[in-house]
Image (cartoon, rainbow, N blue to C red; front, side, top):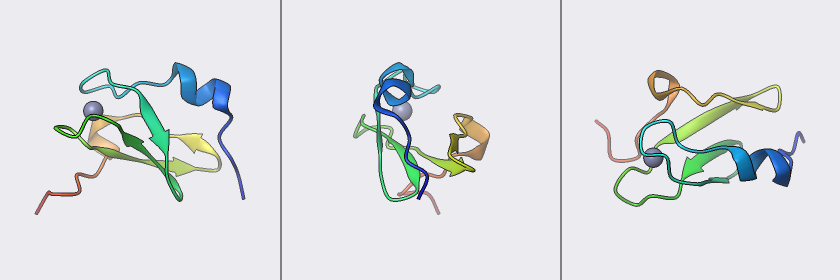
Length: 59
Ligand SMILES: [Zn+2]
């Protein structure tokens, strides 16, 4: 399992709403409940791109 370092998580922010993010199973989730975008993690690298993110309430 590739874990994302706490240091890295601490400097990451949602590119859409600039809120802090948390690590979930194999993705990075925006902590803003109004946003909630989920970003994929590939090879241990968070992909912090809005166009790559998925929205839990989306379609
Ligand atoms: Zn966000």
